[in-house]
Length: 120
Image (cartoon, rainbow, N blue to C red; front, side, top):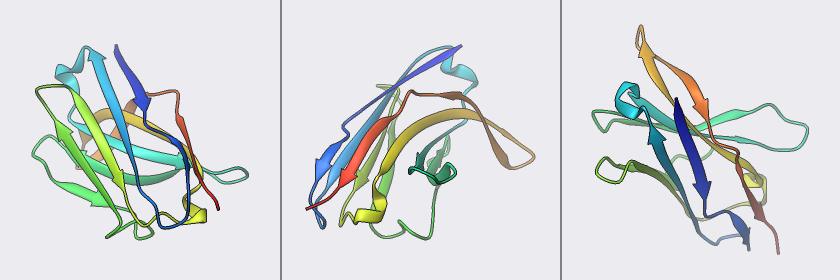
C-alpha cells in the first residue's frame, strides 16, 4: 500500500501562484509514475501533469507553460508549481501514484485531494 498526502491548496487571485506538494509513504518501491489530477464541480477528473521515474514529464494543454511538476526521490515527494493561475484552474487537486504498463500509466493510489480556488 502507498499513502499519499497532499498539501498547499488555498485561495489565490487570478495571476497568482500556488505550490502543491504530495508526500508518499508505504510500499513506494513499486511506484513508477506519479501525477496530479483535478476535478472541478460538475466536471470529470482530468489529468494535469505526470512525472515518470526517469524524470520525464507530461502536461495537459491547458496548463502547459504555467504549471511545473517535479519530484524529490530522497524525500518521496512530488510537487506542482502553479503560476499564472486562472479562475478555470479552480478544482480539487489530487495526487496519484502507480505503474506504467505498455507505456501507459495506471494509477493505483490516490490522495484525498486539496482545494485550489482562483478568485478575486
